[in-house]
Image (cartoon, rainbow, N blue to C red; front, side, top):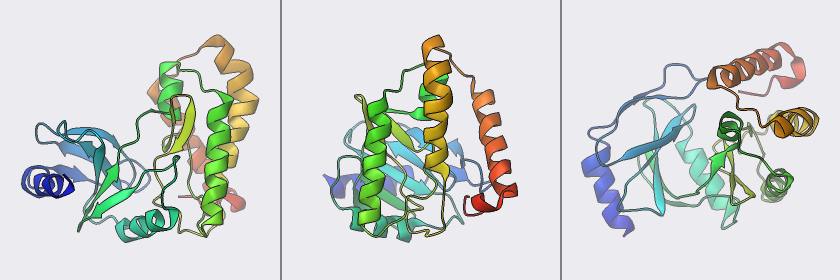
Amino acid sequence: MLSDLTDCIHQGLLPALQLESIDPHNPVVVHRVPSPWTCLGAGNYAAVFAHPDYPDQVVKVYAPGRPGLEDEVEVYRRLGDHPAFSRCYVSGTNFLVMKRLSGVTLYDCLHRGIAIPPQVIRDIDAALAYVEQRGLFPHDVHGRNVMQSGGRGVVVDVSDFLNATPCQAWQDVKRAYWWVYRPIFLPLRLRLPYFLLDWVRAGYRLFRRLTPRFSGHR
């Protein structure tokens, strides 16, 4: 099965795929995806794709010139098998084949007005404690790379977990959850447009650049 998927990646996905990283602080831009592949999402270094014949796996393709693939392979090796994380099955020159995690990112929950239960936050806290036990560092954990799946929390991006620079991103997400989201946004069932979410994200990024203790964030 994995060998067939790898052949499909080399023969069908990579030759026709067009993606680029325009700004390292913003998601990569996917210009073209060959059928029947679909793009599930994009991060600052890579995008994730799925094929209908392989529903249990996804393929993460790094944009040209973006580093980190070898580090991500090492992170998954150290994490082993844990329900809050994906697994890396195959690594290529610029791609990874990984276990598919289903769910909705917290970022998209805010956009769609989907309630985020406290258990999701507690699960991610426990998962990040496990990360530290494995000699890794919970770096750059925010609403776009954690999801809720069936009311439980999962972490979908571990690519920065070898970065030992102190990072407060997840602590700030939790403060916003308990101090703002729970008492204000959740009761009102507000749906936040993406432009507003992106504005908050950009403002936070500027704030952490200007504040010394945030200097370790990307």
